[in-house]
Image (tube, rainbow, N blue to C red; front, top):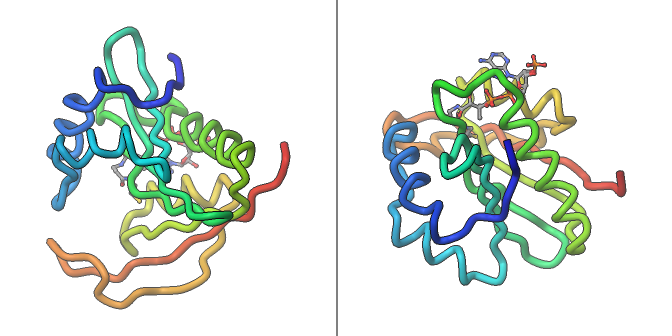
Length: 147
Ligand SMILES: CC(C)(COP(=O)(O)OP(=O)(O)OC[C@H]1O[C@@H](n2cnc3c(N)ncnc32)[C@H](O)[C@@H]1OP(=O)(O)O)[C@@H](O)C(=O)NCCC(=O)NCCS
């Protein structure tokens, strides 16, 4: 498995996974637009031409928001998301980011376990933030340091 910066060749597979995994998915034109957004950094975990997972982020000065993280259902529990996030954190630090913030559905225990393992701390709750279904968001944050 390789961790690569997202390229045009990956966007169709990412859009297909978005549609499969999320109730409010990013569509392919929106994902493609991220390729030319100077604030954005998306990484993919790939085996040959196959996308196993991806993470999307946008950074403003020292603050990064993680937009989405997902791994193909048949590739989960193999360290793919952990590898993506660790690589993302290193690349963001090198670009000057010092803090990552993200929202996660309050009931999403696998994602909460993932972020907990990587040292993200809960800093707040957004009541009713998510739709389809309506649900609270837990806001998590991590300070980035040189590793
Ligand atoms: C959450 C998600 C990205 C995790 O991807 P993954 O590649 O399976 O995760 P990893 O194998 O890298 O797991 C790393 C750690 O996360 C935690 N974890 C991941 N999945 C878990 C699960 N189902 N149950 C409990 N802990 C879990 C564990 O601590 C794990 O470390 P360990 O294997 O040493 O126990 C994946 O389940 C997914 O795509 N879910 C649907 C989309 C989603 O919810 N995205 C997050 C939106 S905020």
